[in-house]
Image (cartoon, rainbow, N blue to C red):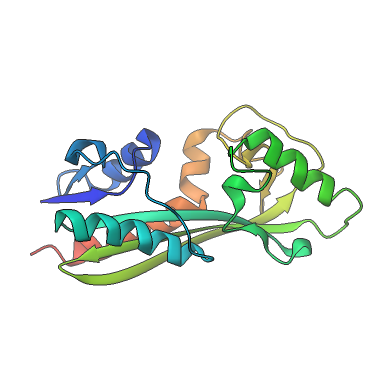
Length: 193
């Protein structure tokens, strides 16, 4: 069976394909001939994931899913949240985003944060949402070279290293995306006709 993942991020495609191998063939937007830049105009992760999934479903009429992820920092009223990728500007510069966040937390002792991923699935016209999260703290400086985005400054609970310092196999086991993908996979495996 085939299902479309509304992304062209090869890392995400590979990760999800590994979970669903032998049961679903995951197709990227590129593989279905969709090169559109789908606008993420909602003010929630759920809303953005649904926008992307609905866009693909309405145009191609095939089962699909999409995700959106945000970093929520307690002391900043859960900012940057849905604006995580463009926190320091529209050019989505990860380094600038980290610098802005660290500057805003420079005098803050409460460094609690969480990463959240929401996956929106449309299967046979019905919409489903799956959420994953991982809690941790924001470090005072970037550390590590693995990962992307805010990974160098996010230290997950029960670890003393940032996501960017952890081995990728460890991160992919405990991450927000992994937690959401596991819920999606369980659902899909239990609904195969």
